[in-house]
Structures are given as structure tokens and as C-alpha cells.
Length: 160
Image 1 (cartoon, helix red, strand yellow):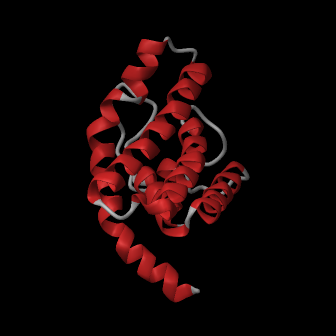
Image 2 (cartoon, rainbow, N blue to C red):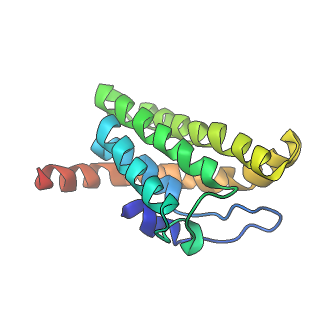
């Protein structure tokens, strides 16, 4: 639900079919706060419901599209950051920053090639449309997720 809500914070990017959204923030936060398994399952449920028609992808869309690769990348990123957080990557700012940047890299590693294939773009065009305009914003979202993680842990621990 957090990822679906965060997806509605969407700003179109000129020259790109992919908007800036809060989804990456949510995916990183979900992974670090729920752990690898529950984080992955949470994002899998988000993806499956969106594919089934729930309009909670970016800008109230659903189904597969050119930006669905980023959602698939979020599944893997949430598992990766969750696994690293459980192994101590959350115990220092530097290690946590590296963990979040790895999560972002995983999202791009799936999302950009998917974008290129789905729209028949060259590598350079896919990078220009699906990576370059997002780097600064995603670094900010990773920093915000880092800051929100301790609060999320408190919330998750109260729910158990």
C-alpha cells in the first residue's frame, strides 16, 4: 500500500515515458524495514495487483507498460536491501548509503533494459530517457529512505 500511495506522487519528465515517483523511496524503505522475504512478497503483491488492474502504478495506471521493468527491479531491490540490512548494513550511515545505492542500481539494471526493449530504444536513448534524469532525485529518495528506516522499524515491531 505504501508503494501504491508513493506512486501517486508522480511528476512527468519531459522526453521520458517514465515519471519521477515516490515508488523507489517506498521500495527501499519496505525492503529495509520488512527484510528480504517480506519486502519481496510485499512488492510482489503490489506488482501482481497492479498487473491485475488495480490503478496504483504511477499516475493511477495499471497493467504492464514501458516502465514496468522498474517495478520488477523494485522487487529485487527490496529483497537485496532487506537482506543487507539484516546482515548489519543498517548499522552505519556509510554502509546504509551503499545499501540504498545498490538498491537503486538494481532498479535501474532491470528498468532501463526493459524500457529499451519495450519501446525499441537504443542503449543511449534508454539511458537518456530512463536513467540520467532520475539520478539526483533517486539519490535524494535513497537518503530519505535511510532517514525513515528507524521509524519504520518501530512501526513494524509494534505490529508484531
